[in-house]
Amino acid sequence: MRRCCPALFVNTPTAAASAAAAAAVVSAAARPLPLPLPQQLPTKMAAGGSGGGLSSCPPGVGNGCSNGNGGGGGGPGTGLSYNNCSVAAAAASAPGNPAAASASSASSASAAAASSASAGSGAASAQAAGGGGGGAASAVAAAASGPGPAPAPAPPGAVGAAAAGLVLHREPVYNWQATKPTVKERFAFLFNNEVLSDVHFLVGKGMSSQRIPAHRFVLAVGSAVFDAMFNGGMATTSTEIELPDVEPAAFLALLKFLYSDEVQIGPETVMTTLYTAKKYAVPALEAHCVEFLKKNLRADNAFMLLTQSTSKSQSISPDHTFLKSKGLKARLFDEPQLASLCLENIDKNTSDAINAEGFTDIDLDTLVAVLERDTLGIREVRLFNAVVRWSEAECQRQQLPVTPENKRKVLGKALSLIRFPLMTIEEFAAGPAQSGILTDREVVSLFLHFTVNPKPRVEFIDRPRCCLRGKECSINRFQQVESRWGYSGTSDRIRFSVNKRIFVVGFGLYGSIHGPTDYQVNIQIIHTDSNTVLGQNDTGFSCDGSSNTFRVMFKEPVEILPNVNYTACATLKGPDSHYGTKGLRKVIRESPTTGAKTCFTFCYAAGNNNGTSVEDGQIPEIIFYT
Image 1 (cartoon, one colour):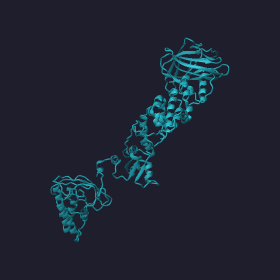
Image 2 (cartoon, rainbow, N blue to C red):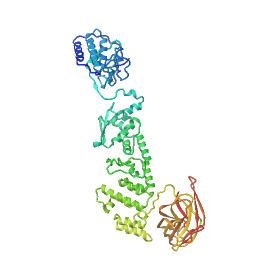
Image 3 (tube, rainbow, N blue to C red):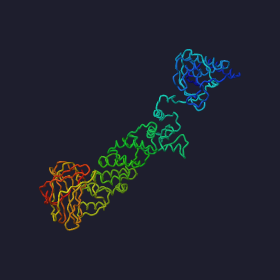
C-alpha cells in the first residue's frame, strides 16, 4: 500500500473550481458531522515531520499519488494531486456525510480543471514540505491521467488537514537517503550541506570569511575538541561559532576528512590544514599532512617549513607557490621528525636553500638554529653573504634604516655564529672586513689570526663545518713509531689513491719528542695530475709529548674520487717530532656494520719532499667519511 499526505496542489485549479471547493467545505462545516468508526488502516508520520495525524492513502487512490517518501507512484492513478487524493479518500470513508461528499465533489472538479489547464502533461512539480509538528512531508505529486479504482474508506480528520493546505517550505533534496546505500555515503552527502545542519561556523576574517554549515554529532564523533565544545561542561549553545584564526579552505579540508575520510590537501593548503588538524585534535589528518610535506620537501621550501612570518595570522601573497599560504613552522607544530628532515635537507643543499626566497623570511631563532649546525655544506663566506641579506630584510620588517649598525643589531647572537676563521684571508678582506658589521677590534683580531703565528685567540668559532653524515673513519699506514724527525720549511708529502669515493676531513700528525709543544702547520690535498690544490688549511695544533697522533682538520671536506692520484702535504714549523716506520703500501678498512671495504694505496711523492715515503715519515693518518 502506498502512502500519501496532504500538501499543496501541484496543478493550479481554475478560480471557479477553487471557489466551489471552498464553498463546499464551509457549507459542510455548518452542519453536524456523523462520527464513523475509525478504519484500521495504518497511519504513518510523513518524512520530516513528527506525526501530525496524516493518514495513508486508501486502496485505489494511492496508485495515482506519489508516496510521502518520494518513491515511485505505481501504476495508473486517479489523476488527483495529494490534496485531491486525501479529500476523495475522506469522502469515501463517510458516505453519509453530505459535507464530505460536497468537499469531494468540489475537489474532484478542481482537479479536473487543473488537469485540463495543464493540457494532460502528466508532470507534477515538487513542493518541499516539512517541519516539526504538522506532519506534512515534501513530495513529488504524480498527475496521472485516466480513471482509477473506486476509493476506499479513510480515517476521519483528513478533510480538515487537506482543506487547510498549510505547509512549511524547505529546500533540501527529498529522500536523499534512498540513494546513499552506505553510512559513509550518507555522511559524505551531509558535508558542507544545510540538510539537517544544526550549527554554522563563520570561518576566516574580512571579505574572505565563509559561513559553513555542519552537524554537531559528526564533529563530536571525529574530534575531542568539538566533543568538548558541544557536549562538555562548558558546552556552547550558540548555533553560530566564529573561527577567525582558521582559513576557510583548511576548515573545509578538516570537515571533508571528518565526514568522509577523504584527504583534500595541496601545496597551498597543507600548512593551514596541519594547523587546523592540530587545533581540533585530529591526528589522522595531521599524519596525512606531514606525509605530504615529506614527499614534497625540497631545498627551496625547507626554510619555509621551519619558520613563521612576523604575524602568524598574516597571509602571504596567494601567487606565491608551495607552502606560502601561511608562514607557519614545523617547530611551532611540534613535528620534530619533519623539522629534522628539513634540517637534513638544508645540510645537503645549503647553497640552494639559502638562495631560496623563503630564507630571508625566517625568524631569528631559526637562523640561529641553522648557523649553530656543524653540518652545513657551504663555504663560510657565502653563508655570511646570505646572513647579510637576511639582516637587510629584517631591518625592513622592523622598519629600521638599513645601516651596518642596524644589521648588527638585528643579527644579535647570530653574528657570533659566523665562523670567520674558516674563510681565507682574501675572502675575509673582500667581504666581512669591509661590511661595517664587524667592529674594528674584531677585524684586527681576525686579520692577526690569518697572518701571524702563534695565532691569537678570536671570539668566533674556528671549528670546521662538515656536511657529511655517518661515522668518522681513519686509517694509520705505519706499524711502528720512532723518534726525531726534523723540519726545515719543506713539506712532507705522500701520494695516495682510494678504491671508492670518500671525503677527507683531516690528517693525523706526529708531535714533539720534547714534551708539550705547539706547532704551526699548513695542510693540503693536491690533485696530482693537474697540480690543483683541492683543500688546505693554515692552522696549528698542540701536542703533549706522547707518540700519539694529533688531529689537524681541513676547513671543508675534500672529495676524493676512486682510482685518482692525490698528494697529501703537511708543512710543519716546530721542534723535532716522532715519525712512523714499517709503512704499508696498502691499507684496508672494513666497515664493522656493512662490511664494505675502503682500500688506500700509497706511493712516494717525488719533488720537494721533506723525506716522507711509503716506508717512514710523517702524515701517518688520514681522517675521512665514506
